[in-house]
Length: 297
Image 1 (spheres, helix red, strand yellow):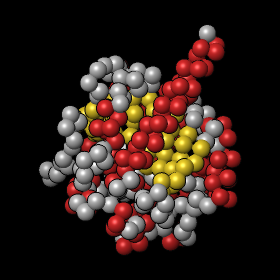
Image 2 (tube, helix red, strand yellow):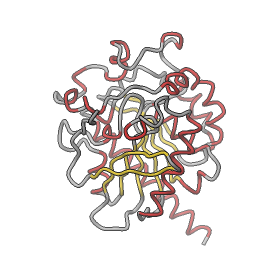
Image 3 (cartoon, one colour):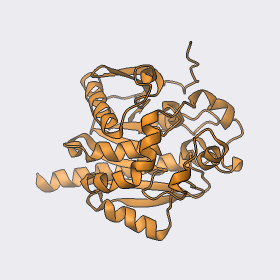
């Protein structure tokens, strides 16, 4: 069957990376002047694809265009089990395997493209679980500048025994929230981005509250976590936030809230605001690095 390709922003091109035999598809944009200041790696959530970060419903929503305009390369990847790799990995991969695949793919990317100061992960929902898992892996401090994660916590706000399918009415409500939070063309323009959730992800969704207790203490790079004002999947009250940042003590984690947004922040009216905040956190991480280098020099 011929794949329906969703439209992309100007100057964005499609890319394929070979991660030790696993072929990952994705979207790439590079700044006008190379080398880039750094590479932003955008990692989508469950049931979506890389184009989640290249919103087309209104000008200004695309993380890819915004990042390139600020001097960064932006690489949005289809996670294992999505896009090109869906036929090869129909069940997807475990988070541990996805982490290895991501590290391998980024190493392959770095052999062919300039990466500036290194890689900075911007991740959404299930992609946030991958970002934390990948950052907890060995030598991650040498690979990642930092993490900016939206729509991913550690305590579900719903009953674990009743986790809805992403395509069910309850799942739709949790993923999107109120229609007013999104431009009117959002749901037609994102139709080609919606994809089945692989079996591995459905299983590990319920396992995550236990898994994160092992993952979080190993994260040593700066991390910022954002919860939408109308986030429904995760608890983000003061008690839950304090528990989460305590688990991520080694990451110097900060938690932010995005007003006027539902779970799928990067496709809503608040997308540009969120992306500017995420790239602002990248700027802070780069400044922190410069100060540290001068202090040790």
